Length: 423
Image (tube, rainbow, N blue to C red; front, side, top):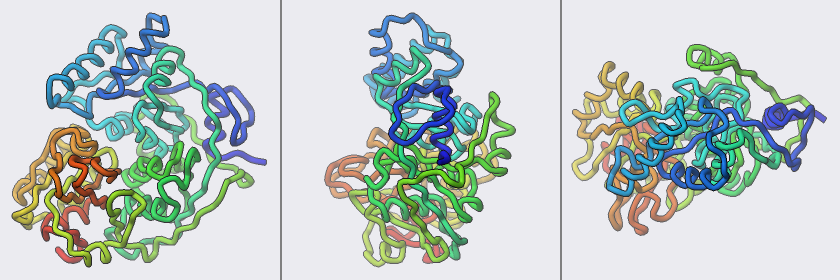
């Protein structure tokens, strides 16, 4: 029997000709990633291993993005801890605030991840890089410490669930965010537990790289070990001008073994809204709007939807509009490059004139860290990835997940709304 993309990548990095789901192996790592929350923990564990230096100073990346710019003294110490370690280890890839962005937006943009890589990160949304055709997954800080020290880590080869997206959306506001919410709504938050989610089909071929990265980003919200999309001409066009090193692409064999195949026709798919308190609690935007729920906050950004196309969509809705008087809107570009482009092309002006605040790149509100904490009873429409109890603030607040156009339309009307209601 043949192998899936995920199996091929793991086999190649383990020096094996063939692997199958369930096999245990040690795989060489191309990149090891941590941030200002998980990095300090990994550094403490690294010190216990008894080695003096990381396995490769070019392959360990430290990014201050969660509580950065530092929101208080403890978070300032966390940022200092990873900066100090980066200096001691002479790491090439440590980036200070102002030169870095939200890690999972920043690394693909900078060409630090390429197709065919094996990447681990002490952050659950490390699965984002599957949008480039890489095997990437989140790990705990202890496993990350081992990865920093040895340059390899053990894995159990996951089963693969194939998700085939057919058709072309008739609704122009349907995005990769809606594709992945539709998947999660169909299979549940544990429907792909410790499996590889392989996305394929006509709709994926037509999807932009921004949309693909968004989809892979939220594979973890279905419980997946990783999400992955085979690299194609669109991927290589994106990678060619960015890649810092060579790459290799992989395709699943025709006779590859899948645990199951899920088919989704996107032709009539509408923008999706995930109601509290699970990403799987999805409704079409029309049904969500019919609930007539007033909102207090809108967040447009995060490692899920802080990319250029996301800001473009929001700006298209907000241009020459005013945000509802009772709503605060926080726009967070994913990287300085995206931020600067938004300034140059007039998007920041659109946001500010509409009544929004535009932040430096940070994870901030997504994890209830800073820059947009919800009070008791408040509701937010957010382009982030999770809406668990207390995720963005008070345990009695509510988060509704949506794409950037829906979020922007909701900001204008002061309730969950579809883009068609505003334009």
